[in-house]
Image (cartoon, rainbow, N blue to C red; front, side, top):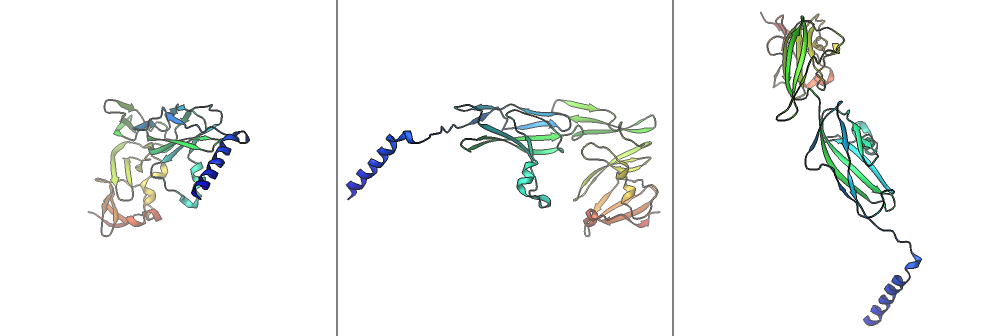
Amino acid sequence: MKKWYLFFLTMILAACYDDEGNYDYKELNDVTIEGILDNDWYNKFTYVDTLRIKPELALGGSEEHLKFEWRLVPLHASYNRDSIPSEVQMQGYIIGNGKNLEYPLKEPAGDYLGFFWVTDTLTKVSYKKDFFVRLRTAVTDGWMLLCEDKGKARLDMVSHLSATEDMVSRDIWSDCDFEFGKPYKLTYNFTQQKSSRLLWCEAGTFDLDKEKLQPKEGSNLIYQFGENVEEVKVAGGGLSWCTDPAREMIITEAGDFYLRSALDISLGEVFLILKRID
């Protein structure tokens, strides 16, 4: 019985082999992707640099039937945010559809995971290469220099490009549309909820934008007080933090002591005066 079964199976295989003219065969070509840095970061300045990558493809046939896609995803992206379908969110991370990438960077400073997808439209097989991008602004790392220029506040910055190279940016606030007056000091505030760089000057106390260190009229701390304070000037080290219960505290130049619940800041909690320090 086993002999007949083996003979029958052999006949079927032979028939399939001999009858190759009745089938359409497609060659499956593996694609090897080179020319993309995958063991280090692409270090770039956002709003300044262009990400240029020219991959090299090794394959057995033509590239005409290949489709390309580049994506740049925040390394700690929160998927399905605001109830957006994940496939829609991923579409928002596409930065190119050509073989070579030339993309002017405009994402916020931070770390990103990049993907280069090559899809064979005939076989529907996809190949992927990962890479990493670290974006900084000209004011992400370095020394902040608060100056007085003709009676007005001016900020310069010495940024660290590498271990041996620095970049000097002068008069960062030259495009601001309002006057600060005389500069007093820069202070730094760190809490569990946020970190802030504060400019204390003649016009008030301003929270500096993290990306560009730009102050805005709406970032004046005066708008974070419950009372109609005409002008708030931070004294001493600026904002302070305490626990049990969590409170954010501030002492003004006038000697007024304010505090607010740190847990409710995101809900719009404002500073309320506690007492005046004589």
